[in-house]
Length: 91
Image (cartoon, rainbow, N blue to C red; front, top):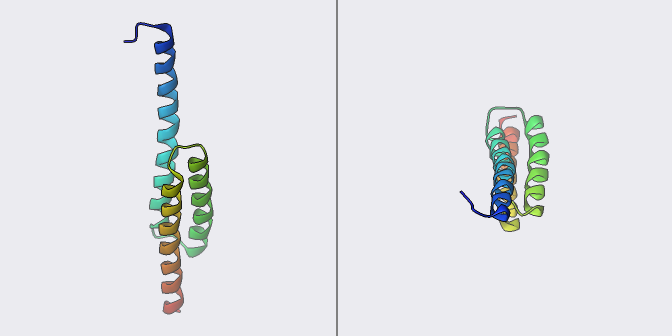
């Protein structure tokens, strides 16, 4: 346990921040997983926009690095575009 008041406050702040950051990271991971589930293409398009928004917000608030956000957006969009192409081939 911390011995100084300022160290106690820092510990409380770190707990809050880590909980907030964990929630944001898990939200991003959940959106990515839902993208790869068996849902319709229209729903995936809505999820894509939501995932972009969440990734941009996380990068802006320094929860993840901006290049990490960019890389994840690229991978999600590549997956979405391949699904879209597969859908057109089946028709």
